Image 1 (tube, helix red, strand yellow):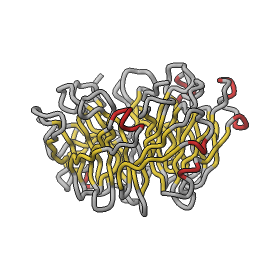
Image 2 (cartoon, rainbow, N blue to C red; image 1 turned 90 degrees about the horizontal axis):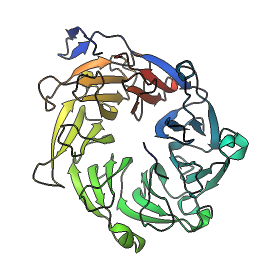
Image 3 (cartoon, helix red, strand yellow; image 1 turned 60 degrees about the vertical axis):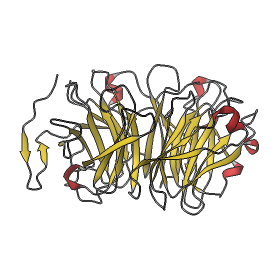
Length: 406
């Protein structure tokens, strides 16, 4: 099963820093769940076939993996969503949906660091009416990953075209790597899953699939935060036959070498119908990588200053926030408690997407310190894109900000 993930007129005031900040009020925040501690990431998929995207989140300090089903009506959207704890694990860094055994019920994969250092499968109940029944879920540790690495992120992806979905996984620290977990014929026999390393890593933040070289198979775009190879790169898929024979994945550098890169996103930022890459960093910049016009695999790059010179960017997305026909950047940070560095903002350009500084517009106000991965989705179905994210330090939990444009 494939998992898919009226313009406002704003007066501007120029701050003493030289930044243009829109005098708009923060967006309304609606809590999806604040029942645990350390919400760490939001991943989307329609798990029940109702046409609405649902959420998987790991709670790092709380040790829970939770799923949230998106309600149908406006009133229910603005209250906590129906939810289930699908498993209890220590130090989860990531949770993502995947139908691991091909039975039509969407399972969850969690990646754990800390002392746990294991990838877990959380098996969904076979009956859809039991999806929110905590007793109907089962959790299995994947032996080939157990206590091996500090696992940080997983990307469901059928690599070898053999037994359904496989997983690309990344880790950090000693022995850090990117590799793929090869699914066996019987996916629930977790001892039969095998791990094949393809890249030596420092600290993996993002793994995204994209057919970079346009040869018909999905490659993997990586942001590696630490170590001698830090930066943004892509790993060339050797194809189903080559992967099945454990052929190497060739590493290709994209850029930001030596920078502390964070979450990246793939989007067409310049309107040429070719995918570009935008990456948040902890170097006071957002880096834009645009494919060179004469090449599939060569990239041009430039930097956009972080809002208010906030040093520690966390995540970025590309979308038309105010429906003016121009792309905007949506950005979150770890502001370290410096609340003038707004945790979540959107940014609009003036003359060119290559502008070094973009106008900054508030989303979060001064609530929240450590924000995370961003998803842009028209949650309330009013025609504009809202922001779904989570926050770890003020324990705001999992929530969505309501775009006021419409």
